Length: 234
Ligand code: SAM
Image 1 (tube, rainbow, N blue to C red):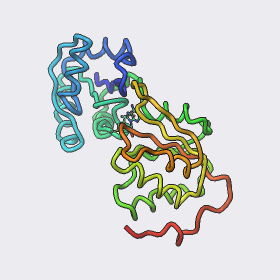
Image 2: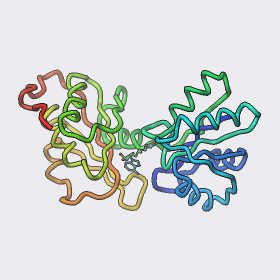
Image 3: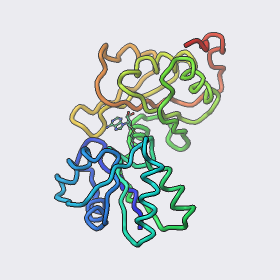
Image 4: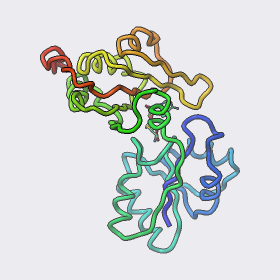
């Protein structure tokens, strides 16, 4: 059996009983970063061998995992934080397990985008999770522009290094919509700032810290800024 196991996004208290029990039961743990997972395993007194399973070796590691499953071993996939496969390795192994008709399931738990969406106060009945935008301005503005007429809530992950630039581009492309900026979720300095994009930009610290999720209201049907205002330059 293959298990994709969600782990905490900051607060170890969010580890589920089933995640601990499943990790204790498997033959091998395939981890995005074996050092990060070692800290988790040590905390919960789980002693299991690990192999590395990250973005750069995902296909190769997936074949190794498939080989183990075929000889009857059980394997758990664990990413650095949250749900495997959500802006983290996991997709390739799911595809391969389906192709090989091997059984697999998930042990569900934290995912930063779900928590940010619920806390945002923006519509939760219909939303699009866009994950990480491209790093450069032009491609990032085009990426945001794909959703500019969509009526549902939009959710993005962004690195601390680009959060300011992302918010500026979102304002330029989507207009001054209601939004929420969630950071350090489940951690000591958890915060959520709600307001129009322009206010979030104004209140963003000069040197932002931590991990961010951006939640932005869908289109209200009024025209977004013209394409030439949110230009496509780098
Ligand atoms: N698999 C994870 C999940 O289920 O949410 C996401 C992993 S992705 C590599 C990391 C990004 O998720 C961060 O850059 C940030 O956008 C978001 N994130 C993860 N943990 C977070 C937290 N505690 N607070 C706010 N955002 C978080």
